Length: 416
Ligand SMILES: [Mn+2]
Image (tube, rainbow, N blue to C red):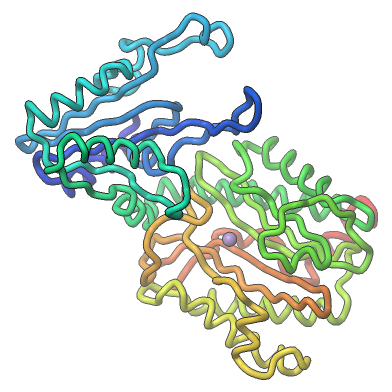
């Protein structure tokens, strides 16, 4: 395990009381259908602290007498499984790779019994995050219930919330990975500008993006791409991506590359035929101005939710002038989503929404959605908060209307 992860763990252990244990899971791929699973991606909190991206592993760190003991649990190799999926690590191999004792899963329960009976552990740190009461229990929740039943004196701490808050402020190495994810995202967006046109299907646009990012080093999409032609863009999280683009419409693309498990998240809105109409350009520039106003204003100490208000206020006059807004209430209808979220190992990155601090990475993504005109426009860039403002991490990705039209005139396959 590389040093950065060990350093993060060392800092984390300082938060843990004596006689406490941290238990983390790397996760597994959910079943898709039949014998097929969805692609595996590591649990982000576990990855943040350990750097391990092997499925089905369990990590334990127990603190006793000021000393922390780390331990991994791994699946026991099975001949039949190895025929289909390849070699499975032995305890010796895993201990060598992971840098501490690794034992097979069947040793996990006896190990826990030892911790809670012989060593009198009092606190259990588990990632107990859950999106909704109705969602199925994760491994951590199931384990918490079993432990509470067996040892009712135990106290539980939601490690997920603590790690999530730590993850908000990025280290220089994390920013490097994010800059690369964003750079690759930009290449994918150039490819979209080159290949879009009337009659082209949204799915083809998605394919050009994915081809370009994966041939340039991205491991995957950061999230399911939104490729929305015309009025499809009014649904904020449209993801069907199977309509033909129409001459005279706009195309909204909200997508990102994943690199080293870090994500880019960029939105652009382009004219399908290479030329904005007067009306499209008017509202495009309205959103662009709002984005510029937010980027000029964000700085440490400002609450992350403030960016939405700044965008709505900036757009109001231009919306009123065109008769689509009479009051600020109308702006909440025209821009009904938050303008900023944290970005990192998750696209909507973890951590409580609070005042901004240097090193936090947020998106700035104002938009305007006008159903009566069939127009949806969103422009999104990623910024890192600095000591006195912010730095845009995606300055190279084309967004000025004249530059978009000039780039398409020169490079678009239907126009050149
Ligand atoms: Mn976003």
